[in-house]
Amino acid sequence: MRKDITVVAEPRLVRGKNEMNRLRVKGMNPAVIYGAGVDSVAVSVNPKDLHKILYSGTGHNTIFNVAVTGGETTPVMMVDWQMDPILGTMLHADLLRIDLAKRIRVKVPVHTTGDPMGVKIQGGQYEIINREIEIRCLPDDVPEVYEVNVSSMAINGALRAADIVLKEGTELVSDPRMVLSHVVSTRTSDEAAAAAAAAEPEVIKKGKKEEAGAAPAKAGAAPAKAAAPAAKAPAAKKK
View 1 (cartoon, rainbow, N blue to C red):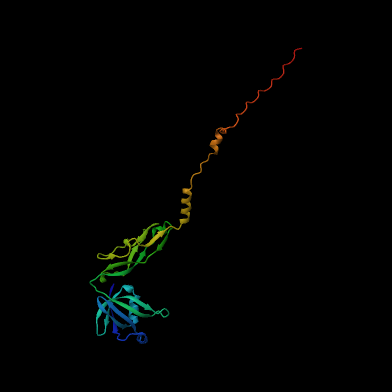
View 2 (cartoon, rainbow, N blue to C red):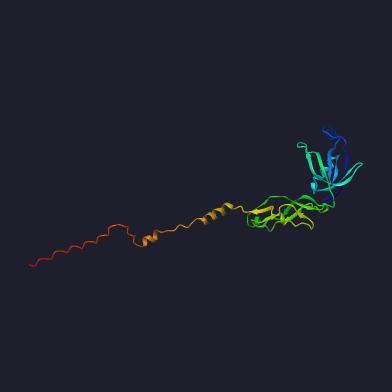
């Protein structure tokens, strides 16, 4: 996003580690301006000016003017910088010249608002996967942030890069399928157990059917003998 900010820079004629140390003692930082088909220029800038821009709402996407004493005044963006790991102060910055008539590639943050339905009602969990998308647009059309309401997102629902509404003339560079955030179930273990139980083959019970009829005879078995008739009682003798 373009801002009406101008940072004054001094040309840096001498290079080297010793010269950089002398600059930092004076409260200045080395920087380089390059790009747009023009030769690079070594300059020194006040690091406080760059700090304010870097930690502003538009951050490194801020397009501002740099005015070199006795030289050019041109719109630039900070594309790279080095910070002191202990003090947190800026040590060096690369400033890219911006042609306002040509489209540039930038990464823009995506902020989500609202409580997803999949969390409030269905008991799911909301997860943020990616926090920005890359686009190509004219410098004056670079947005500060994209805001998306995810209140209607249900379980297994997802916000993808393709769902971001872009301004006319803006091209999506990121993969349209890239997931920015989604709602996942927190009962995956129970669902897996239910699925396993449903997939278990049914056990066929044969015992009762076999008991209902006579057991089949085994091949080669001798036929069963008929039961012997009961012995008659002896007749009574006549007197």
